[in-house]
Amino acid sequence: MLRRAQAVVTLAVLSFVLPACQLESTLGSKAAYLEVHVEPETARVVVDDESVGSARVVAANPVKLSPGKHYVTIEAKGYFPHDLELDLPPGLTKVEVQLRPLPQ
Image 1: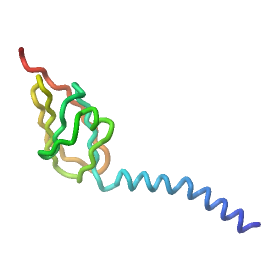
Image 2 (image 1 turned 180 degrees about the vertical axis):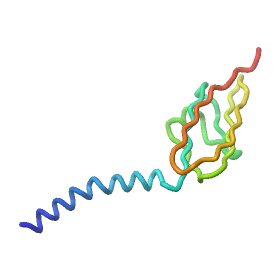
Image 3 (image 1 turned 30 degrees about the vertical axis):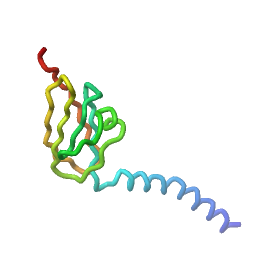
Image 4 (image 1 turned 135 degrees about the horizontal axis):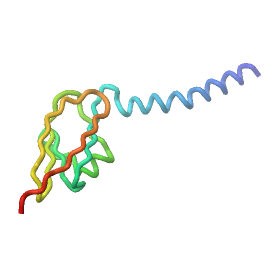
């Protein structure tokens, strides 16, 4: 009976520990994640000359990158583009940008 109780306790502990380990490996303690919030949300986000999606998509699903320097361009029709040079650390980095409209 004692062995069965130990097995149940071990199983209960693992049910809490394993999801936490999976979350850490999913977020990748060595990976950098870039979350971009832009006005307008329809703006296109380009990282290192590669389009990664609309601002709405990148806000909801951060882009996984290697830590270090990355060049980000945010552009939308009718707005000035916005260029950033970011030195991303491991983990999540959030950026907020409001694009300036072109003069009419």
